Amino acid sequence: MCPIDQCGFICTYPHQLTLHHATRHSPDNKTPLISCDKCGEEIPNLKMSISKHMKTHFEFKCQPCRNKKFETQEDLDKHILGHDSLPCDQCDKVFTIKWNLDVHRQNFHHPEGRKFACDVCGQLFFTNVNLIHHKMTHEEKRFVCQVPGCAKAFVQNFLLTRHMLVHTKEKNFKCQKCGNGFGNQARLQQHMDRHEGVKRAQCEVCEKRFFDNYKLKVHMRIHTGERPYQCVLCDKTFVQKNDFQRHMKKLHPGT
Image (cartoon, rainbow, N blue to C red):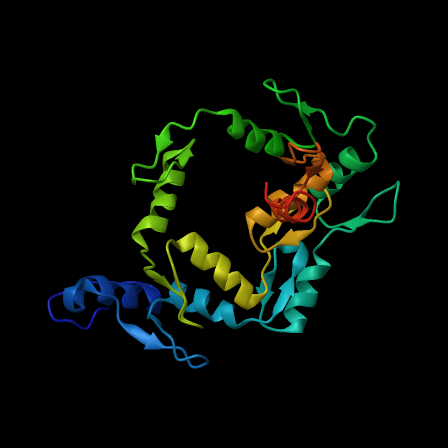
């Protein structure tokens, strides 16, 4: 029961009473904060917030589950026992998720692995997701940056909004570990993943993991055969922009 006079609130669990106090009786309805015993960070005194924060200190990770964390090695071992062992019947690779095994079989052991074709240019892809990302390159770039001297344009408005941070220099999202600032939550999360060694972007074909989607995008060109950078002087093509630039400086300097 809430100890505040004339309130009358009754609940079953302690965390419900804590939440009630935070939303009804705290000054300005702000949730009270407590300090973490491990790192000293102040976090909301709510069961969900405390549990989520404490998991950031867990060190034992399950890679097949996108680096899901566990407090002890024993907890991780118990979790792994629940995984299925799914070997490929045509090679020595073993998977824990059936969908990944199916994608592997289709892409590496199926004679027609690249069955998703672009209806605009005819280029073939291993998965429908890759095809969807490719087709965005054919869309009209209707959202144009209005800053003088900037000719950038985008197919979606949220991409333009994200681009505008380049001009405004706003970095309101701060890393609590090193103090670096970032323009949006997504960039901050990518940065925090590097601190923790978490690679969230995973290749659907070979299961290799990367810290960010751009590195994954470049990696996918190995599977798709895409070589977007072409030298107009000798018709040589490249997978990465850096390789193309090195080629130009070495073989075609001054052009």
